[in-house]
Length: 103
Image 1 (cartoon, helix red, strand yellow):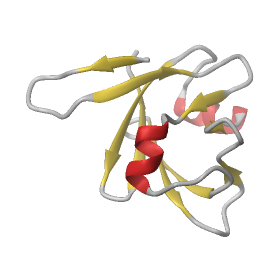
Image 2 (tube, one colour; image 1 turned 45 degrees about the vertical axis):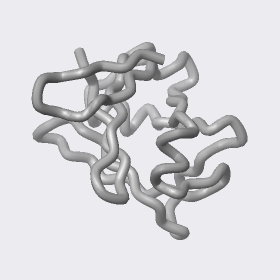
Image 3 (tube, helix red, strand yellow; image 1 turned 120 degrees about the horizontal axis):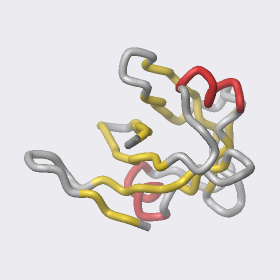
Image 4 (cartoon, helix red, strand yellow; image 1 turned 90 degrees about the vertical axis):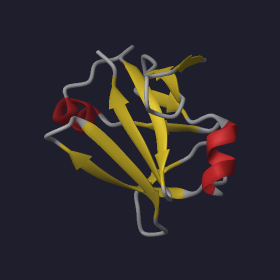
């Protein structure tokens, strides 16, 4: 896990999308958001900024797996122009998780 620090902003965690399209959400961040393994997450794509925003929703299809990962579908990756092994900045904004490519 890498920690990136930018002037004037909080620390952000950097993770890599694996070859199955999965991204590990660190336990510290899941705890901060009060997210548990198996929780369902809704997605919102900000196409202008190529950001994926996740928030807890019982009606959503995406779920946190038994290892704390989420699977970013090929459709979402295409929409965001993200590749396998893409480095993703993970940050928290209020009760939402914000994912943004750093490349």
